[in-house]
Image (cartoon, rainbow, N blue to C red; front, side):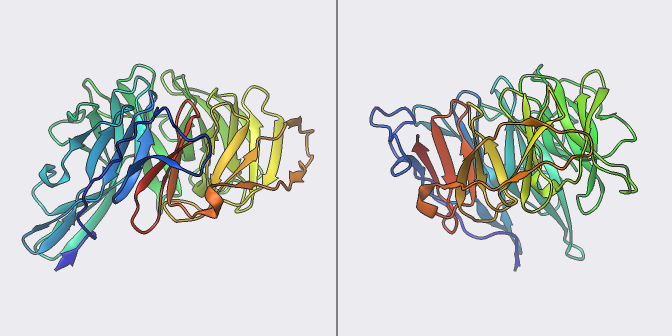
Length: 373
């Protein structure tokens, strides 16, 4: 039997709402649990959580995985937005796993990044691709590119402020070394290229704007990485800095106010740069991982490994930035991070927009737990 996944799941959610009166003031007690196999999740702007749950079923000689997608309201109630077994795409055996969610600015539409596999029954050959699925918060599929619900070969979506336009990455040089950019219009019209002919390692939207910070390199990969501020609607750009180095696996992380950006220079050193005064920088030795900012931008939270691998979660202060003279090498700070959750290993984490809650997915069983600060 062809196998594309693991086990069926049963969903159990505790009765405690996010804003329970006895909400924990530290990270010693959970305030909410989703007690089964969660494959990905994300906070909405208003504090709701969209999450996916592993779903397995058999179709002829194949065992397929198509994750269910759920929405957890701030009062603890939940509703299923998508039943994976009923989802269709093409006429061949098809499987997917949810990798990530990206909410629209108004919190009513979610772009879901899938890792898909399609099998040709004639020779059992398999084609893998990343794709985007768009759902509103009532579970309605939004078909922006014709009858097919999926936008194929698309990832890392960035919403524009109109809540109806996306810019996403398309792989140009495999394996995931360089990307181009494309528009996706929710209302109508074909997908079109953005900044045609240019290639980027990574890009992230500046909160509250139609702009993004992107790390550009040419196709030959023979020049330095350059940090660009891209006006996604007007297709204007401004170069902010030439980087000494850049590790794409760590990605670009922009602070909630859009004033600071952080990225990894190598597997150890994190650089923080002002987007208002780009020559002001700081460097810290922390180790490559997945990073998020606190709501007040005073701290980082870091899972000390990339992608969906398991590691401990730590936090550390955002350092003060200093002007970097031309040709000077900034001092690399050696901070002592604060270990969270008593050193518990986690697979994924997320911070609520208001800074009041920390959600984590645990390895193994992969249940979702929410803690109150």
